[in-house]
Length: 398
Ligand code: NAD
Ligand code: MG
Image (cartoon, rainbow, N blue to C red; front, side):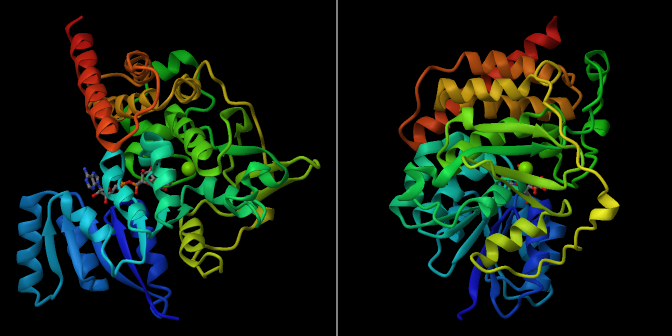
């Protein structure tokens, strides 16, 4: 079997690092074609030295120049490219077979879509890209014969629990699938009161009880916006209406999600909370690959608990369902407002409880309907960011 060329968009991040960890266990099956990062020179330099990709892309041009100098001084042959357009070039390059889409936020949409349009195996961690583009992305995958494999642990679990025949053709009948049960840890504030939630600090919000992840997704897990984005992601990935995607709070994060069938069966995927499992599954599919994840010790786990999510203390979850019901413009606004709000919260410009207020106001300003092309998506994204920034500014004045 010919070795597969891998491009990692967002190599310096949490998912990028876990992906390289899995790849390093299978040097005969995969080689790294390109690594990309926004501006983290140290991390990319170290990864280039170890994995010797053909290309390294830095979106930040000044950082690209520094990386190039350091690699040259070290006698490396890695070619350094700069700027966001270079992301699209490596993601759609003829020598790339698989693309790990692990950039955080809207910045990942264009290169991830480029990978789909080039017919690659797209391993999707960047849920924001699918939340923003929805049908447009799914159509691109179909039209260009790409493969779309979910990395998000919940969606990867669902993918593992779906019937083999869950193909485009049988999807109309859903192969007996009644519901997807997306599990949620509930985040670090699962048991906190509304009053306590007002005073949450960035340090508390980024400390997730079960998973170690990038800052943005950690805050999203604390507000439950992450689960909201995942509900929308599940609807697009699996072609189901939102009524058939239910959120179940499961504090141990041992079950990564479930599929409920019309004969009363519920299939679940269990494991330790370590992203190398879904990454290895997507890399190897339809085979399984060693991932480095320790086997699950059920006796140490001891119990599995389940609760209803609290939509009042965590209003971001119902906001996401609401946005999805309104249409594409609303989901783009939801995502953009959330990105701006999380950044402002981390920068101590707004409080934790302001996040859903800002998102709601900006989402409600989006027009009805769904954009038909990438330009319209990007315009709505930009407009929503401008509205979010003025929301923050007016709040500071009062
Ligand atoms: P992270 O913050 O650790 O890494 C983000 C990566 O994106 C970095 O490599 C960074 O250089 C790159 N990046 C940031 N801004 C960019 C820009 N403007 N242009 C180009 N590149 C940019 O994030 P993460 O935790 O690895 O998450 C990445 C994605 O995967 C997110 O969409 C997240 O929701 C999703 N995800 C993560 C996990 C997890 O366990 N970390 C689990 C499920 C899904
Ligand atoms: Mg997830």
